[in-house]
Length: 69
Image 1: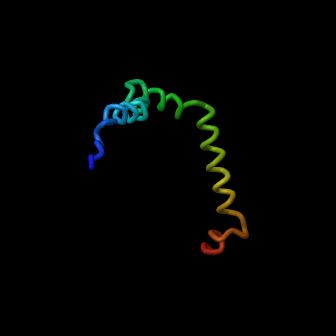
Image 2: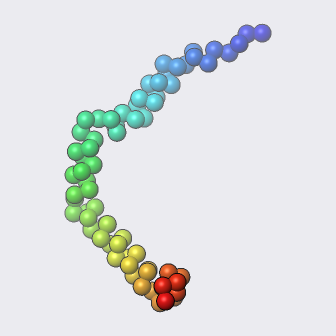
Image 3: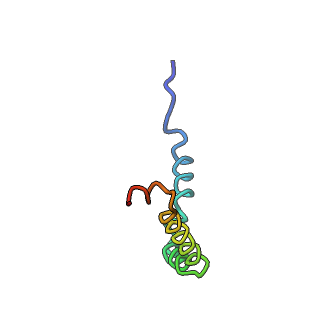
């Protein structure tokens, strides 16, 4: 009975792994991420999420408000 060769596709597997992580390893990736985080759309999204969360916390019927009072 022949043993299966688990390493026969190792090159293909390594290539897939490299392709999957390559975008995050690209030298420009941190710069693009910083530009995205500083963009007006991103900042507006963050502000709206913070406002929504504050409204939730201050809603009279919320469990957080009940715990605080």
